[in-house]
Length: 162
Image 1 (spheres, rainbow, N blue to C red):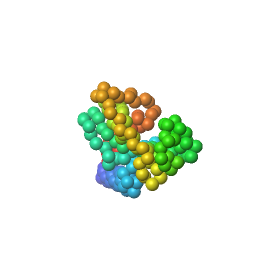
Image 2 (cartoon, rainbow, N blue to C red; image 1 turned 60 degrees about the vertical axis):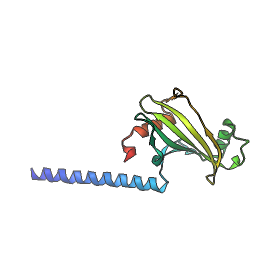
Image 3 (cartoon, rainbow, N blue to C red; image 1 turned 180 degrees about the vertical axis):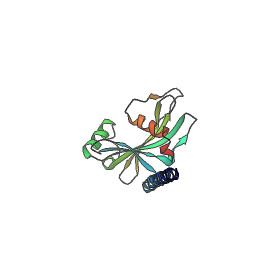
Image 4 (tube, rainbow, N blue to C red; image 1 turned 90 degrees about the horizontal axis):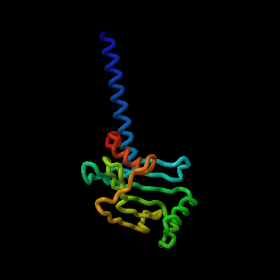
């Protein structure tokens, strides 16, 4: 009987040690990236999305704001993004690096809206800023398997906040 208790105690101790080390490593990794945490990326790693954990704020019990960074690493996909979003005439756009969105998520109703959108160059200088004004009712539905759903899932995850 004592051997079983000893085994359970050692197993529990190892489990606690693993959990502490894992979350410690995650915290170190986040801090090394300025608080940006990988959200998702495509298979080619040419489109990468990060969430900025320190920026999370509560609008209400069901709504949160968070910054999301979208990096395009492939030249052709970056050019396509610039054309699709009519950014060609912006001064310095040839040095475009990434876009950051301030996203408001309604956790309960599975809805989102982009409050602000900033386009940056390789030196982190803002090339273009767009701030969107919404009425209280203007929301977009979260589509399954979308970036918005990835944000929603991370914001709901208790692991994300450790």
